[in-house]
Amino acid sequence: EKTSTTDFNGAVDALCSAKSIYIIGVRSSAALAQFLSYYFHHIFSNVHLINTTSRSEMFEQIMHIGPEDVLIGISFPRYSKRTVQASHYAHSNGAKVIAITDSDRSPIAGVSDYLLLAWGDMISFVDSLVAPLSLINALLVAIGLKKRDEIAQTYDRLEEIWDKYEGYEKREGPNG
Image 1: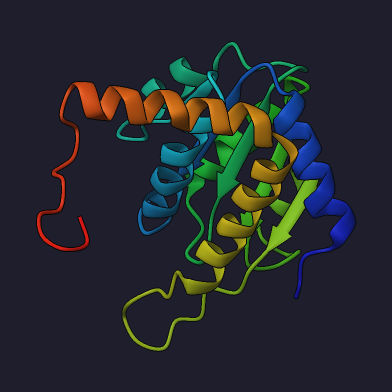
Image 2 (image 1 turned 30 degrees about the vertical axis):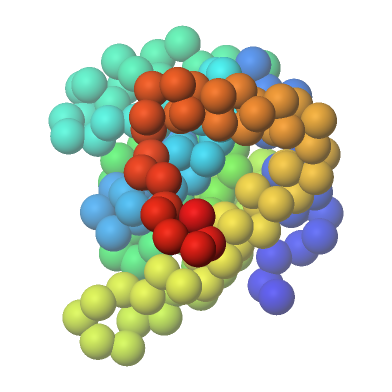
């Protein structure tokens, strides 16, 4: 509800045309970044989930980011300095920055080309990731519709690999 259609569609287009996609999320946002990265690896061949265990290693991983690339920064209160710094670095190198955050006053909003807003309400000591995850799901679906044929080929190939190398257990019984 808070995200503009223009920013959402712009983010989809930027991702579909990116040379490389970098994803960063720290602390509770790391789960969102990992989820997004998992599915993006099925869609794109150029995805980098940024390891944020140290600041210097983080910059080593994004040092080549440039104008043909996209960085997705995921940050909610308390905003991670590493995500903010990575977003500023990407922006200063000409990369498109997609911010997935809670407010236009978020520290990454000012450097974002596309601002995707989702309120991650905190009703206790646990951050709720429901709204941000719904936004990420919508982003995945929109990209999936745009790259429908490529994704169908990818999943056909994955099914063959999973069958050949027994990636999943097959269900036994009347339904399986």
